[in-house]
Structures are given as C-alpha cells and as structure tokens.
Image (tube, rainbow, N blue to C red; front, top):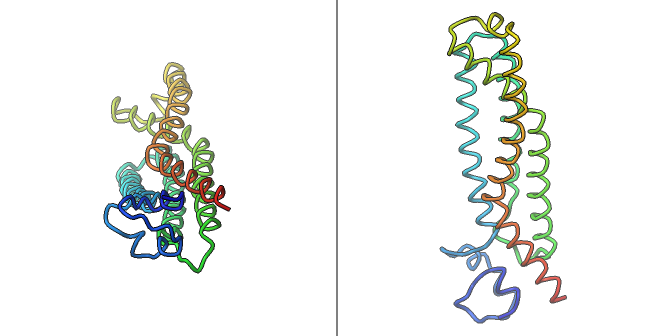
Length: 204
C-alpha cells in the first residue's frame, strides 16, 4: 500500500492508483477514517453546543435585569456568536471529498492550516473574555446567593478579593480546559491529516 492509501484508510483495497482513491464515493464510504470527515463531524457538534450556550446566555440576559450581569454576559454572548459564526464558516468551507481536479496536497495543506488558525484565534480571543465571564458569573451567583443588590454585596472588600481570586483561578483553568477540548475534538484528527500531508510530500 502507498502512503496515499493511508490518507483514505482504505485498508481493504490494494489499489495504488491515486486517482482511483480520490473518487468521492471512496472518501464517503461508511466507516471511512478520513480525518477531514472526522473534523467536520466534530465541527457540527461544536456548532450545536455553541448554539445551545448562546441561547442560555440570551435567557440569562432577559431573565436577570441586572446591568452588571447584562453587560458582562452580553460581551460573552457576542464572543460566543462570533465563535459560532467562525465555526460555521469552517464547517461550510471544509471539503471532505477532495476532487481529483484539484491538487490533493495543496487542498490538504489548506484545510490543515485553516483549522489550526481557527483554533488558535479562538483560544487567543477567549483569553480576553474569560475574566469578563468569570466576573459576570460571580456577580450573578452572589446576587442569587445573598438576595442583595450587586452594588451592595460587591462593596465589601471581602467580595472584591473573592472576585479577583476567582478571575485569577478561573482564567487559566478555562484556557487549558478549552485547549484540552480542542485537542480532543480536532487535535488527533489534525495530527492524522498532518501525517498524510507528510507522507504525500515524501512521495513527490
């Protein structure tokens, strides 16, 4: 089997003809381990969860008429909508069926770079949103727990220190959790795609 066969993971075939392996029907076979198909499937799941989270944020904004919470959660909602939009753009442009009319290696490289760039951009932008999210959640939790206006319980030095500690703790936790989730959803499939790219480059 050639390295091109590894890309399609068609272990039951011994066809060394690259053009034959790139037929759409081959790539779309049930049970195919095409990394692009796996990435697109996980992008679909990502979009669904992001949509549900955006809906929950909207419910919070409507239900809790607290300007501090509305401001912080509103900013988080804007980020979530942007993240949802960029995920949808990736999903829409990701071609799991590589046409023989297009250079295979160039197409694989384009998708590999695009997904990596999308993940890195989201993680960097999220670093500015995590403190806002932590603050909004803290104030909402304090309001629900104490039953007092946010201005009142946040005027206490102990609460201000607790808020600062929460942000210091939660920001790195959220960042590394996000990296781990991206790794679980896309990382191993990107690695497989990268190996296929390397293998195809070695054949040239």
